[in-house]
Length: 515
Image 1 (cartoon, rainbow, N blue to C red):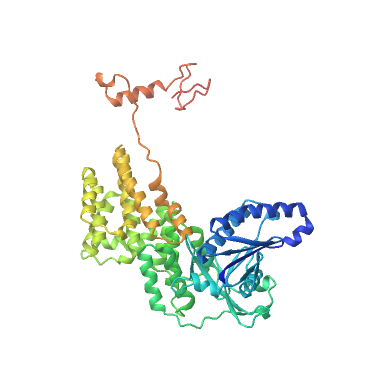
Image 2: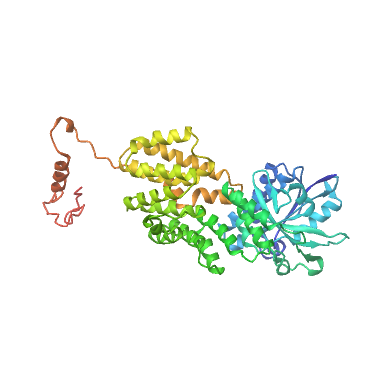
């Protein structure tokens, strides 16, 4: 019969049993407590155990993929919380093939191949055979399907195992997109020699299939526009790796822009240093978003200003057209400047409305203009009408977040909690909408949690209330007089009489509270 075969082994366990048998037994028990429930959760059946090794079968290839990734991710998280001598490193080999089940034992070529795949895995990694890849791949891309998520792979090498005459292509399956992105596409096999795998067993993979650069770039742009940023990164990176195009810097910047929008500032800054980028607007935009997420808004504004050349737009008697591809910088500038320099911001918006042809951005910028001009009472009704008239589409959610931030701040400042909460709820729904377009679990989580704008939009709202004084409505007392009287009472201590000339909140003599 044909089935999915799962084989695991703990790295270095035999040596550990000789060095510290008690610790080895503790780790094996902990290993079982972690792995067995995950196997059962995804309907895997443990066929047998050989020391620290587990052999299991699955009816569903996707369930086997999902459970393997969750096991390795769980162990990775566990190892991060433990000292090195208590680390558990597992290798998992996966295959789909013919097996014979007899007396609770597995036999056959499929089992033999799976058992040979496990020893060539990366420490803490997962390797899969080409026959399993054919069961779970998506559109013949280097993407395989789990039950909950999509995962990314790279071909390692063609292997010829013992007792087999045919060569088998083996892939490395990555736990997340960032690991896949960071691993050089043409050096995926280099770990083999470091782990002592004989070079006679394999021939490093070389891509022979012709790569359609233009088509893949177009697909990447489409995914990016729909905020499916995991797949956008994948296709941009495939263009860089296999497209043989000399102008790869711009594609790298597209990826870095996505990473910067997910709040991955350290990763982006490191890659910018490693790669020889020429100064251009996209590079300034990426750096600006990074600075914004690091709460360095003044520095970010300087870079965003270069991107949009805002001064020329405002002062020019015949404004030039705005590059819609860099319009992100305009929204960041509006957010940074709306409270510090309202006149500048309104002039910028008016200039933009005169120069752009994109109706969706015109709708959003008009809404911001109404907000900044103080027509707050009309904003909620205007927004609802905009929604009814379908003037916003699904691609607008990203830019509507800037609107929500501004209107929430203004309503909060005016102590209109119900209005602020209305738009905060809208903001949370927009972030949820955008994150649901992302297929990869890791980038989805980063997108939800990391960007500074998302953090600020989700913060609890704080209002400035004046404490009610009993009987205040019945008295003809000016509120300024009450505040002055309160300040006068704080000038000396009621306990010891010491004057509070330095306006401390506590008496420096007796420690009594002056507030």
